[in-house]
Amino acid sequence: MHILAPSAPPRLAAKDEGQTVMDQATLDELRSQLEGERAQHIELLDEYGADPYSDEVKNLDIGNDGFADSAQATEERSELLGQIDAARHRVQQIDTALAQMDEGSYGICEDCGDQIQAARLEVRPLSVKCVDCAAKAG
Ligand SMILES: [Zn+2]
Image 1 (cartoon, protein in one colour):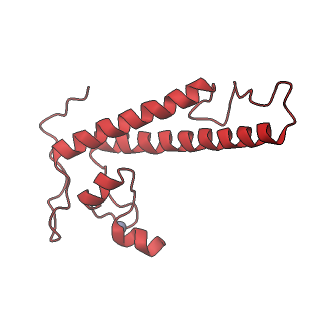
Image 2: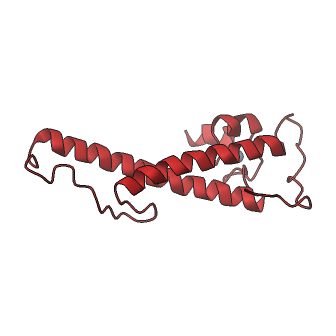
């Protein structure tokens, strides 16, 4: 449960391109969405004894039994490692976004420092670049 101090006004006013700054209700919604997503990833990582903040995986025992050498086991293992990697990466991205929400710097383009369009953040809450910079970056 996060209670935001009323003394923290939401950033700069939108410049000229309309609905740029996200309203508080939308921000709260995104936050709970991200927290929910984070919990799912943590659950997956927990299941395999994987630490979200290191490369360590403790319980990855797929293929460590009698079928260790089968191509399928190898494939499953690498698929799982890929999932764990993705979950770990995602948790870290979400952590960053949540921390930015706390300090009021969420949604600022890391390239140009402008406010990322609210509509973009609603679709992709982990965007770190505005549409223009993302397009430039390819
Ligand atoms: Zn930008």
